[in-house]
Amino acid sequence: MVPGHLNMATPRSPYEGVPSSIFGISRSRWSVDKAQEFPRYFGKRYVTKDRKPALLKKVALLEARVPYIETAEIQKWLNVRRGPSLRDRLDAVRRRTKDEPTEGEELFYQERKECSVCMEPQWVKEFPSKKLEALCNHQPSVCSSCVTEHISSQISEIAWDQITCPECPQALSFEVIKAWASENAFEK
Image (cartoon, rainbow, N blue to C red; front, side, top):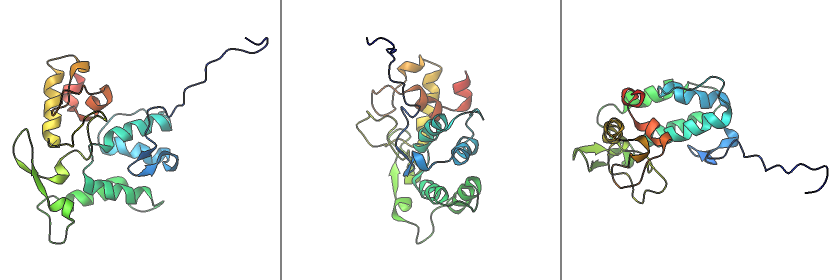
């Protein structure tokens, strides 16, 4: 050790664990105001004093739950400084897509696939837009409702660190469990 110098470890980055891109937008382009709208809209709790890295971690967890058709609208919203709020934009998308798609809707929305749990044909938008965990080696084939039901039912039966993906034996992180579990089940 050199006299007069402290042997200090390099401080960890506050952005550790935050993806470099969320909803296709680099984290440097996200504002705190826009990041705060996500938990509010999706009914998730956050602390108003949360700093940008903590907010972006929450937004990144929500990204997996957002249907593809809404992701496109979110990307448009993130790229404009003014205009309708996130709530107004996504509510309009949900009203427009509430029933079966109209002629001319994009192919990803018109496609149906069968959920591997409930065996019901679902619109593609009803499935997670990406893998629950990075280590899962499959694309989602379980609809969002069944994912929520699977995780919520496991919370009451086993320790949270033993909850697995509904499609493979991969253990789910606390953040994924929190993002997908029903609020009632998570609070228990």
